[in-house]
Length: 133
Length: 100
Image (cartoon, rainbow over all chains, first blue to last red; front, side, top):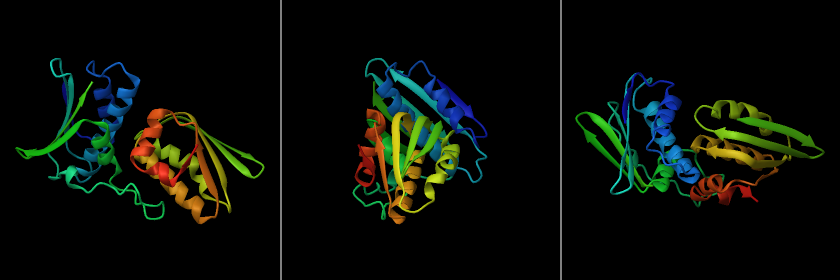
């Protein structure tokens, strides 16, 4: 199931609901929580930062493989080349005073999914997240 | 997302109901802004009906915690569902916010 959204400004929730309403999403409350959180953080990352001003497209793809039981969610955009996985993980042992507010989104994706990969391909940022469901 | 704030003597009781996500976070931030004011706050947040939070919700809770500490007050979050609690645990927020 694949759909291209264009433009994506203010469209985060539409893109998230498109993916979460897919028949590929398992009927399990705990898994749905983890998938929704990962999808929201990854989509927000593109909508907020990929394009200056949000004028651009995002292609959302969701696919379930019966043999491996892997659910794959892929987001593709043509924005500024950016690998979100290169960002250092936040230090989760810092005190409240020292804790800054950045970097939590992709960190949560990494923790909630089984794997997350980034590649730059034909002028597109491609983020692939997988989870066994 | 609903936020109900009740002042009970010296304590402020906050009841959260719903999801904090990209759609609701702006209103959530406005709704909790009264908690950012006043000296020595004593804030008790009931999370029984908080079904979901993204990192945007976490940011707001961190801001609130920092604000409460600066004003010499205390803040407790209680009755989180296991999924929401996991988000606080993974990110280390359980170490900087009192969760019971």
